[in-house]
Image (tube, rainbow, N blue to C red; front, side):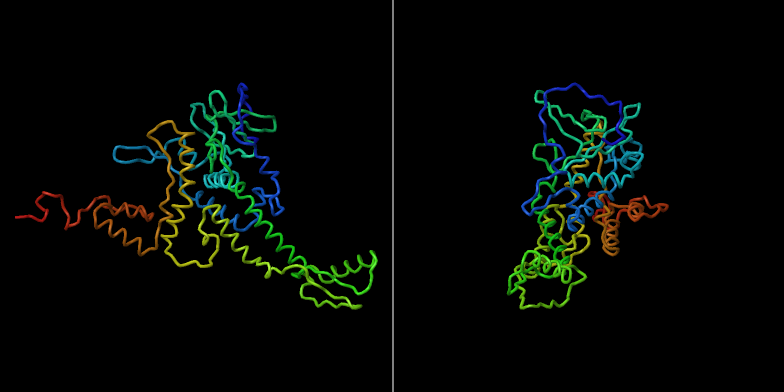
Length: 401
């Protein structure tokens, strides 16, 4: 267990439990796939498309501010003095920035299906720090009698039992509502095929980008002579340094190819299909994984809206609701990601929208300036009513004297 967890934590009374999920060792020592490779979080990240999908989603979520708001009679106000706002906006713990903390949340969700953080409280029982815990060290258990959830955490000093009051648990895709399931685990076969494709390509180029085959000798070779011939052929014509060399066959020998080339086996085409599969697994538009085949031009606003709606929004909601459940007790206080930056358009389109808002009278000059990170100006908070608009039934409703 990470050394930040307090040693003062004592195991609670043991009761009859049902384990909601097996521990993380299955993901560390995973069974081999049909392609003959083992898929773990680390080996999956060796696939470029997986690495890009994970860093894209994690980086996008981490870059969005996660703010605390308080409900008000006329809308909402930022709860800047709330202790949870300080954790989310400034210092989740003494070692991490908010960006790193949110990035870690997404990395754990995408690769393991769960994110756990120990909640440290101050003397006033307010959340003071959030300490992430390796998901592979946590086992979720449920009391068969009461249905209560506990978290069994493996540490260097043994096992500790934590209750939901001390645990921030963000679930990914879940099949039982108690623990999330890793996309890497569910799509192990597809990702295993991608790893096997990479290994095949490496082996192909390691052997000088030449196909395998059989050297046929007209005479009879003893075991030692055959071994000598095999080693001599490999030393002269195998490996990237020997690619392109012309083989000279002596004593009437012939070479018969028995393997397919990468072109014949459509290796390049299969790698393109793999990128599409990984895009489907992680819910990312293929164009954002640099799969540009058949890609058509679309505006930045439309692309960002699609990414926000279909790729990011479910993850943002999971995190928001988990934080509210674990850290907030006041029903008038809630957290929300600020996603406005993802919907920013080009300069002309944005200014045209501001002009419409000002002309319609539902935005002020200073509200527009705040959106553009500009200082307020005197009189900029006054809401001006356009000359061609007025309250129905008033003297200026178009039915004057």
